[in-house]
Image 1 (tube, one colour):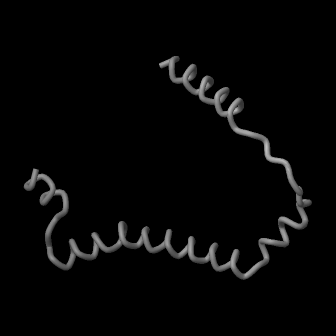
Image 2 (cartoon, helix red, strand yellow; image 1 turned 30 degrees about the horizontal axis):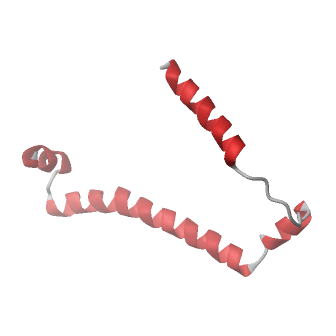
Length: 82
């Protein structure tokens, strides 16, 4: 199990060696925060939130609803098919 640590350390060293440094105009933190107030940023955050909620509803509530409506137990079906 210790070899995982060795692989991680080697990967970290390789990333530090081969990722170039970027030079350019560095904006102050206040300017970066002001970009977060744009409509595009707010819409993208809301879109991401609704996608996560939709996935949660799909995989959590719909199977429970279908198993109650059709009276089919999911565990039985999985055991029967395999």
